[in-house]
Amino acid sequence: MKYRIFAALAFAAICVSSADAALVGFIGTVDSGRAGPVLGSLPRNFTLVLDYTPTAGGSTTINSGTLAFKPTLTNPNVIVPLEPTFGGLQINNNGGPMGQDFFTFTGRVNGPLLGPNNVNFSFTFLKPADTVSSVDLNPTSLASLIAGPSVQIAFAGGSGGFSGTGLVRGAPEPSTMIALCGLVVGGCGVGYRRRLRKAQAAA
Image (tube, rainbow, N blue to C red; front, side, top):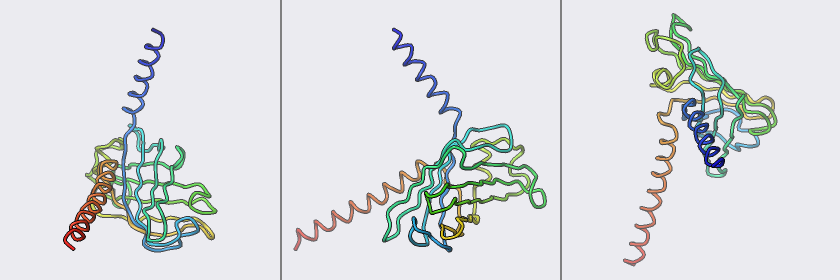
């Protein structure tokens, strides 16, 4: 009986913790700069998925996140699991230049995950003043603020480390989108193998 009670309490705790958190994702590319010893070469595509707790205030610290650099021809994936204290989200209503609304993320990857030094990075989405009506940080407000064109992102890793600039944009439903990208690539491979077998059989 006590084990059933413990299991029920554990399940309830998991449900509460997951209900309090939300995901927001980004996709981007690093177009210029210095790759450093870990990434190996530029340019590189990346995804950034953040797990955060919705708040009634204008800022929050990220619970956890993953920064994944996609492979080049000579390097495998570089996946960096980010620590809970690695960065924060901020929303401002009627702030910024001429009262614009904005969303900002500022983060840091601790050394030596991407090189010998810490790598700091940040980006800001500026929107018209009527995009959001409050600084409540929730999935609805974030979706409004990160929709649309790409914005600049800058990575700074100090001497000999990864430093570069590129573009980043919001990725709706990040886990689904990343999974679909994998399915598309996998489907292309299956189609290629089928065509190859048909050609061999005909020969």
